[in-house]
Length: 378
Figure (tube, rainbow, N blue to C red):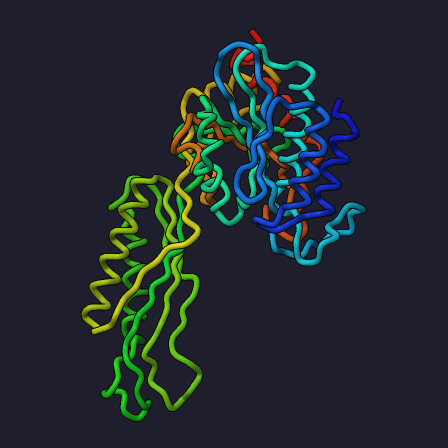
């Protein structure tokens, strides 16, 4: 049975959410709880992140389990007694539940410490803004750990409670935000011939991106381009604009397709800009590679799910959303899986979402079974 203190931890974390890279109190609370369990080492990573290590006395593999510290800049709509106390910020992605699972795992490991190898519990900042995992991977102290395996889970609304969702290869899509800046020349609206108006280029770029999105035969799997924002000139009826921006979200199930999609989009945009006699600058933000699972890790996840008598669902295609866990799977053997949060559960990032406490125990059992399966005790 799940100890009441683990649920209490989840509710405390839910009440006190903090945005990406500002998770100071959250990190301190986690550290306070885990230090009671006497980890062998604590490593600071990222802006507020920490890795708590439990070490065996003889050589062996190193495994990392990750949870996320940050909340979302969304106002929660809830009458829960533990609803967010911070206006405009809430744990509406379930990171409070993921942290509670790792706190429960810490208690299990502290009671049955490894005899060989190392187990690390990583509490990572800034998952929601992509750069958190990247900062951790670039941290020299984390890099020195050279984990043999790294695992994480994410609760998934719309699936039965406790169902384990697995997939070899890509589990979540690659995505990136592309900003296109077009520089022409302003003029009087009565004399547009004396300027260079980007309006025609904007129309052509939007049409070209829609055509590229429709050409799925160019790619090995699903790709998407979504126009999310267009800015053209100012609200000044006497002025023909000379500057415009287009923002596009690119998404692909496979990293190779993302590379091709980016190349195709850039090539078409630059061609249009040149033909329209416009300067063109292209930049990127919130870049997420696809999260690519290693088959060895997927096999372990499936075996421990069966050991714990939890239902397993093999996904046929990746999820369209992205995850910065992908930065770990670029370098280390990684296993990322879903845990069903209920078929009637509101979707992630919705203002009425709340992580179901009932699946915390399943998450702890799965991670602890992975720890044992990888033979850290013998």
